[in-house]
Image 1: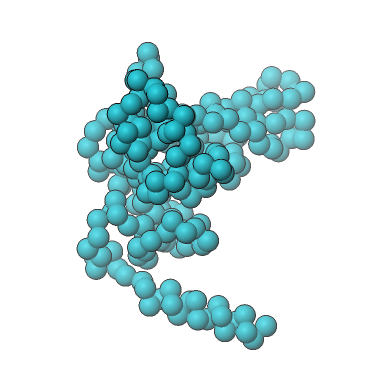
Image 2: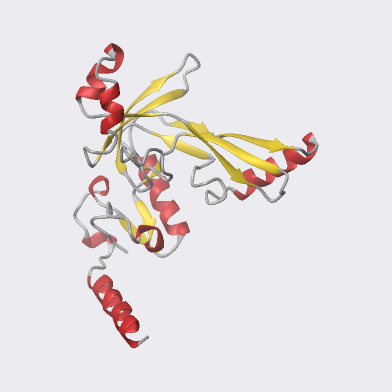
Length: 219
């Protein structure tokens, strides 16, 4: 309709008026979010920002399994194809591989606990990483931008002696979650286990739409 077309034109005009070139922005990357038109541009920024951080990088791979009534060889082919495509929309938003560094900016890409604010789009800074006996991350401590995010989880850990300081500082523990997803074969279901976090320095415009956490933007 004419009214909706006019509204879209107004929104586009407003968006254009807020565009800034990267070298015109004086706000640090960890205090802003950049918007781009393509995923390739987003990936380049996120990779560059994570790489620029000091500290030990922990590269974490998702655990992927295929369940159902098919031969093992078929399941392996399906699993390999999923890894080759590396499409997070196929695995319910969870990524197959993420590098975690203390000080990095991350967001939750999938709903974990709606009542506790641990939802798709919640953003924060990775403050600390707990390791298992093999030196691999088993708990990620995140200070979310909004105190309400993870509040219930922190309350449950108030009497935890080993994590008293983390909770007192407002850090929320993030653990691996497991999600089932459909595959290209009706008889097979995929299952992924991964930390529900991904880089939060840049997004596409489409991803940012409707996300109330988006603040300063550049294109």
